[in-house]
Image (tube, one colour):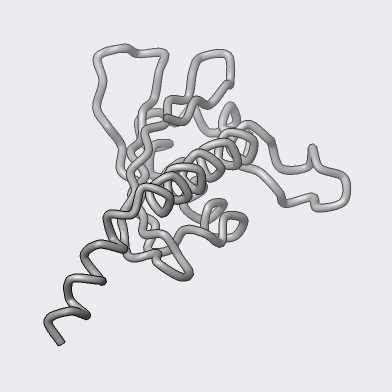
Amino acid sequence: MAGRGLLSRLSAQDPASQRRSDQDVDSIIAHLRGLLNTRQGDAVTVPDFGIMDFTDVMHNFPEAIQTLQRAIRATIIQYEPRLKNVVVQHLADEELLIVKFRITAQLSGKGGRGGVRFETQLLAGGEVTVR
């Protein structure tokens, strides 16, 4: 039993495993950038792919924040299967032309026990950044 615990600890610290995990997260970030910068209706073959056009709801600011939170969460749940238990939180900011959100989730699948956190910014021109 003691050897098994040691092997588990060693495999958890395996540099190759960590590189794969980092590559997975980088891939998820790239996918989220594409997903959140695509407006529904832009992808002809999958009309609901992407996020709603948030310029339509921004005139209801600050109430629009909850609408955007729900839209971001629903889009990620539907189109990013590598994430589960997705939570989207608004981050208050003094900059009036930027709306920020924190996305926290767990990785799905094998070895998906770890949590991830991303920050997004909805910029005035309509671009969404993810980091």
